[in-house]
Length: 366
Image 1 (spheres, rainbow, N blue to C red):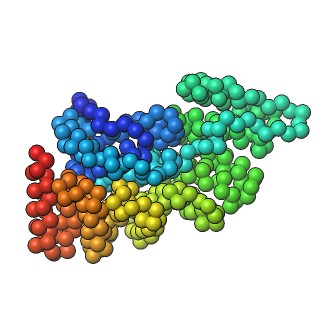
Image 2 (tube, rainbow, N blue to C red):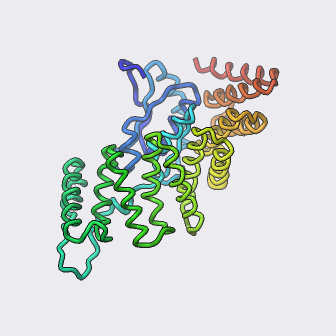
Image 3 (cartoon, helix red, strand yellow):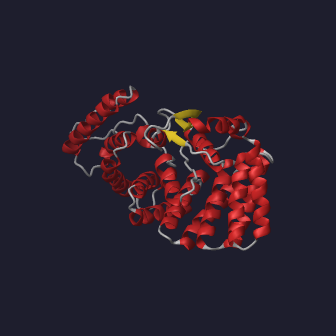
């Protein structure tokens, strides 16, 4: 985006839906940007996500937005889930992890206080931290939380389980402000405290492990993120009642990391699992499912498995047509992607036919 480029807001709402809107706009060839991404990701309760487009694309974007409400209305997706596709695998991953986090820091964000216990050592109150947080004064709340943690450590010891609420509040506040490098060691500390409290397979480890893995991935430390995501999946597989969208998001994140690392077979495994779970949860034309189909198709294309990519692009075309009808830019974009892989397979007549159809749709929108 150029520094002097004027962006116009075309959507404001829940983070997950904003991600779907962005994906649909990009499928139609419109550059789209999400504003206040970090705030909406780390703590979706604070603020909302806004989708912006360049002024010159406003008319086309508004035409797509006109068709959108019926599809987005009644969408089933948890606030903790985040998934979004872009044209580039690395950007897709950052959108998934940095824009779109799977897990809300529910335990840390709830107004907890240290568990009472028979001890002569006084523990500081978190009331002031909670009050400042509620007022949106995050810098002041962070300083207060750091002070409270220091006092608690001096009073009851840094490895005592009673320090967990203090660690939780401090790491939450740092994350809200995008101070991820400072937050990372605190997430690691949460992992260690939970392991001491409930063992190495505790479901309570999923949240801090996910946040730590997300930070590593956003910093390009993919090799460090991989074992953390793998450990989350192992815990989820042992835990009955895991939220399906949480499981899906972890498989998507890990699949995208493997893709970036060029480990296509492993990437394929995880993206296929994510798509299968989505397909059993949402209708085929749902934007979340379509985004997963598109992502897997691009992976197969990049890996050189053109027959598999063709089948997926055909599925994407059917989903876009079912969702938007036969004259929509999102369908045209899917047709063009399908034509590209057909051309790579030497199926030139089929490719030409799809391109003609796509260009006709685009011409109708001018």
